[in-house]
Image (cartoon, rainbow, N blue to C red; front, side, top):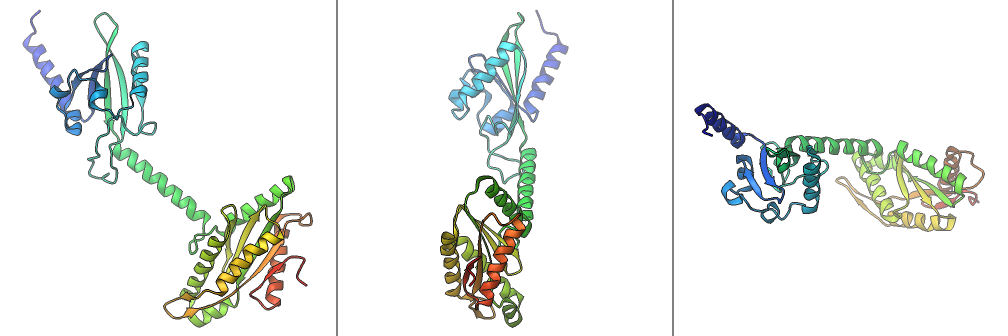
Length: 321
């Protein structure tokens, strides 16, 4: 049957549209041999339609997950229904370099994919169309937002100067540790310590130098504790440590390491080289405290005893004398 001029013109317009549309169009048969390959695919792959035609898709693009795509295509063909995957499920099908001007921080193009069945005149699915959508801008924006939210969440939990947990977050963990003791009875020690004569450091050398001393204290503490221990800046020059599954003797070893390291250190600042010490109080958990605040009070009392006893020392609650 002859094709009319009107039909020929409409077909030309259709082909022109498929070639210029900003969506990748790939038609494959059920053996995964490429039957159509539009301009989008040519541009981003660097492979012309004539070169890829009748080639098995997996031979041309060995990076494509063959088992995964085969399952998808078989399902589409058998059920005669579309399937859709987003970049969040699989970042891309075709490993194309990202070329979007505002998203050049991404190495590869993020893609959504629609797989559509194409039936012959007998109604049977004979081919499948893969529609590839470049969603790099959307993906990048969402990833940036998620990263920003994670950073904000971290900032809300940590002390800005030292990077340690802030008071609120650390106290919540202390409360949880106290409740864990009430349930399971494992030994745990709470440590409170502060910098001796810190006001004199600020008054003599200024607050910027004082900040350097606080940061140095945090660094020494983080380097001295175990991964399971929890360190927080309680406020000003005061710090707290939760030492799970640790008795008084073990806690004393850790605290002496912190005290001795700090006493032997010199903090170099723009105004002066500063030496300083810390006093440390340890409160092993027991049946006596009714809540974490009373446990905290015990550690504070041990710390105060260390101050009264001459500073630069470690004191365990109940052993002050």
